Image 1 (cartoon, rainbow, N blue to C red):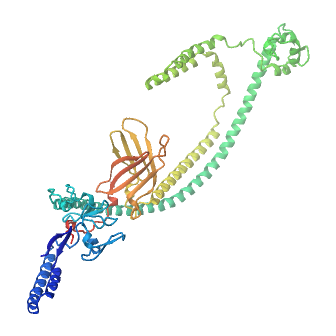
Image 2 (image 1 turned 60 degrees about the vertical axis):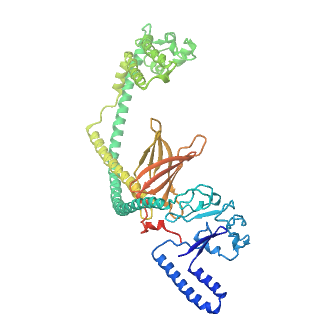
Length: 572
């Protein structure tokens, strides 16, 4: 077995090869008679030690390779005993005896890996049974156990316990659990991929089928458009004829009424009943005043009468054209003032209510009551002016009569054609929307094998003490106060934003609601492997920039068949 001794802070391990070398040196100083004996014994010793070393390695027994303390196996070639040592930064070459002599010779501290002499030195913890690591050389022999194998406290007197095996066992348990989750997640991922492929094929077939149906529906819409236009032409002509006839009828009615009013006005103006209307008789109607001075002068009256002093019934028609718009019949006086008074009285309380000092304190229920009251007042306002009833009846008299039976048939036929056309046009629009939505979904990058497809059109929530966060993959991220308030947009889908080796480990949502005097909100969603699909955490590491953690089987990679016992290796 190899032996070990400490020389100037250097671990020296003598293997069978060293023994053989020692023997050769010793033999050169022996007598020739004795040389044969020593030669025989030396050869036997070398063979014995080499066989012992091979046997130890074959059994997996830890074997430490001779190297200075604190040097990892990967850097062992740089530390050759009995040869000058060159600093790893190439700045200086020193004698090997100066390695680990507790004096810092190299700027990079590489000559003192096993002492605290260099402030920038690194000590390598072998940590057999766990994972090796580096610690700052300033922690060597500081009384605190940093390496689980206690090698950093070789000369401090600190009572350290080797915990590498226990740490290795715990790590293997964690790795085993992670491996099981990864394995189950990967199996789920395979199912998601199969479902995505199947779903994508179905959607593509559906789009193709809908495209064919769309062409047929477009032809149907055009045919119904022609039917509609054909049916509307006679309908329009019949309606125009009906309207024209009614306009002529109304004109005749108005003419009759106008002549009646004219005759009535002539009789009212003919005060002396001599069958003539004079200038002086016309002056009795001050409302005919043209210069708005309140009186109708003789000159103004004479002008209205066409420059003559008096007119009879036949010539009064030309005078009537000049005065009928202003003339007030004596038999139909102006609406009395009391008719408008109730309206004002009803409106006054409404004005008072609106002028209350703190309307913002009124509850929604009270607002509704006020609305009801307003409706009630409006009904009251409409009730008093009963004097206008004759006007309404007059409007009813002037309302267009119903269409004739033949015209009504044409209208109904045209309406049915319009309904059929609008129904077909609506179906075409809906089909266009469906095709557009499916094509939009098919255009998304759902991963190398479409494994993220199942997240589309889904939303996941996470409730905290103050907010409810909502993530809708490939759509948007939002935040809503838990106890009332409006929703805030934390970003809409932007792109995959993971590292170059796998961009599908992170999502970026951008252009959310702007912060007060700040940028628009944005969210980064980091994806990790898991058996379930859920939003696990959210934070705001920077102002208006949110970070979410999301687990999904879609990111689980195929587990490699790695022997977990390798994590408890012993470095040779």
